Amino acid sequence: MKTIVKVILPVLAFTLASAAAVSTNEAKIKESKKTVLISGYIQNPSPEDCLQVNVDCTPVNTGQLCMSSEATPRQVFDKNEGNACSVNLFKVID
Image (cartoon, rainbow, N blue to C red; front, side):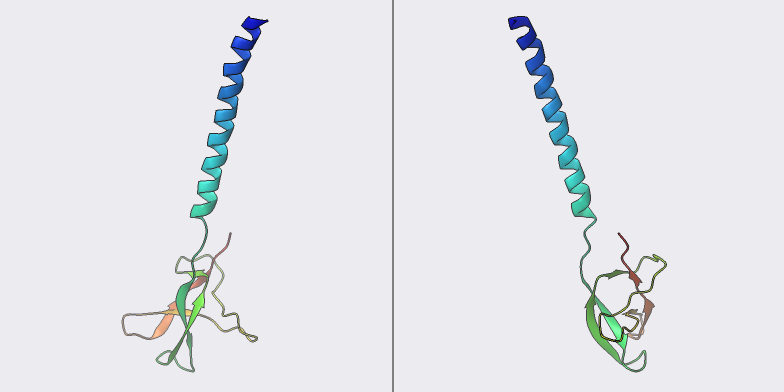
């Protein structure tokens, strides 16, 4: 009986430790994928007149343009070197 306990307890401890390590790693991966609000700009009404908005978008092309959260959504842009809001931003896709 003592031999079984001496063998099973270390195996059980190792199994629990392995499971904890895997779940901790998954939590870190999920945390790293969280998005952050960035400053985007709506053309108001021209690219040279920009209205700043906070959006959950990215400059990385995901295939879907970033839109504002207004009642009538408008495309959100980033500013270029000339300070005009004309650089496309894209919707973050999980």
